[in-house]
Image (cartoon, rainbow, N blue to C red; front, side):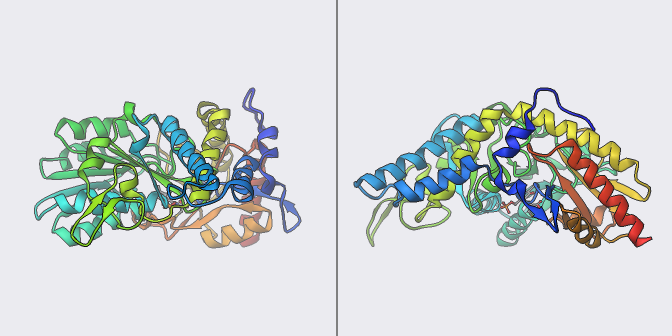
Length: 410
Ligand code: C6P
């Protein structure tokens, strides 16, 4: 057992009603936060309050409810701006999530610019959401996808990155924190090297924003994408941050209501940022819930959360390393709070099922990162991913459940 000083995990846990659940009569140990975190009452209540008291469509009505909904929706954008330190609110585009945000950039930024001979540079540790949209745009334009390899430890080969980055590169798209390995990538170094030859960079922050303080201006990223549901907010909502200049140059991704100033059959005039990229009635409750989630995280402080999760990572790594027949996949020097592992004797899916019987929820599978599985020659891994509400005693339960599983299969 261990404890991070001055971190009141008990009172944080009290904010998350689902953590009281029992699974097969055992206390829930929720370690599937990389897939989706749980929500505190502050988020649940923000959504409930909206529906009970203020709900109507946004940006469309002069009546009181529409104005109240619009204000709450706009407040959430202000909260996101502050959270990532965007230069202005209209650099914050609400999307369905990280996947939607990356597809927006692929189709609206990359597709009109790319031609045969051009290249998009990604890495071997990308989630499918940061691979497939670029494959699609390459198919559409004749451009080529280049991939930075990774080492056995799960770190980017930065020498190869430097070699692959060239005047042919039209965009670099890189994950901030790998969902399959936990690696924290040197994104600032990547941005600086890319900018030195005029190449813009998209950072996939899906697994980063709830674990690492992100300042998009300091990072100087051109685009930064993340999802609400991985930062204690609702599903179906996310954010694309983009630099104003680039967003202004990009055509709308989808057409419809709210993204126009005027429409006639002869000529349609598009709305200004951010509405140009938010066609149709948005996920109003999702956005309001996301705003509440961000306020909640900021109240506790990402630095404090990161320190607690780092303590969990160090403790869990040492506990798991003690287990015979367990191999950790991803041993980068810089890691966020997740551990992927395989067992000699047990398939990851069986690990998932056996651990569930002990109340431990973790993800088993390829984590939508099949190239990573191929790189380490494993069909899948089991993955324990930590959040602000996890405890050191939950790590003990995890380790004991793994040992029990090995015993049953040998
Ligand atoms: N990873 C996981 O269990 P969406 O589905 O759009 O909210 O996020 C996609 C995504 C993009 N990039 C990274 C690094 C991610 O981890 C994810 C989602 C989940 O690892 C579900 S597959």
